[in-house]
Amino acid sequence: MSKHGGFTLIELLIVMAIAGLLFAGLLQSLVVSGEVHGQLSKRDRILADVESVALGLSTDLARAGFLSSDPAAVTWLAQNWSASSYPTIEVDAGSAFDDLTIRWGAVDSECPCDAEETHTVDGQTRCIRKVEYFVSDGGLQRDLDEADAVTVLPYTVEAFKVFFGDRDGNWSDQMPADAADLSAVGVYLRVRTPYDSDAGCGTYPSSEALAAFGSAADLGIPEETYSNCSNLLRMERVVSVGLANLQRY
Image (cartoon, rainbow, N blue to C red; front, side, top):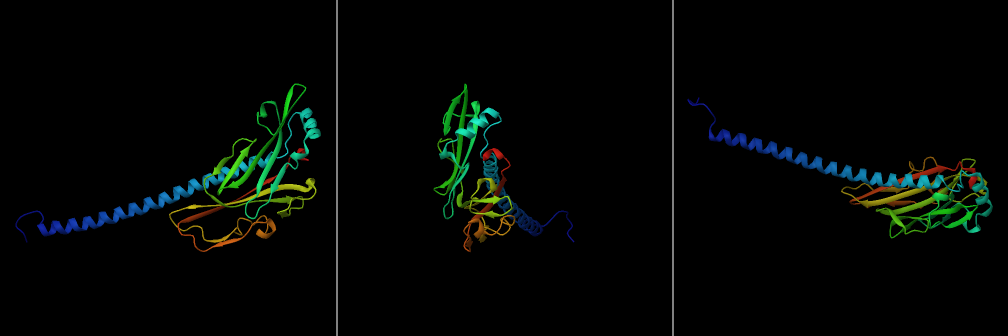
């Protein structure tokens, strides 16, 4: 036993070595935790962007064919809606990307200077507004009232397809021949973006995403299977809106 208190040099070196190992382990744990948090934060931002576009699509689809709360304006717009403006929901179909056009009527302050059609009747401005969604250079674009198109999703769009529901609850990639049978519209959206892990493999659209609507073939959505998804994230979202506004006819 040492006659003096305290630690020997060897004991101090051992303690320092153990402390160094513990500190290195803690530091590594913090680094890994930070990386995981960064991935989750990025995923949350991407999800928020996709949800924001889904909300905008839902809002635009819900007002398809809306004419006005003013009975006189409803009558006038219904009688004077130009042939070029029908149908109120119009789709130019493509293999993976559809062009979606939505039109509705507006009155007075709701009418912008660049509305598709504008008329003045009995001192009141009445117009037809239009919004288009389409894919260009890999991004989803939104063009409101003939203004410059705006990119609403900064990620690569792999699919943007529109499908239709009838009053019997059936879904198809074809709009019903009789507009009065159209009861709902759905949109399938899938995007991919660089990511710090592999989260994009598998077959799309997934059966879970389309569970309430039918098969991809019935809805006109091409199926794709991805086995090489290194450092990629894929997200898919389905928007469906019931068209309760009878004015659209």
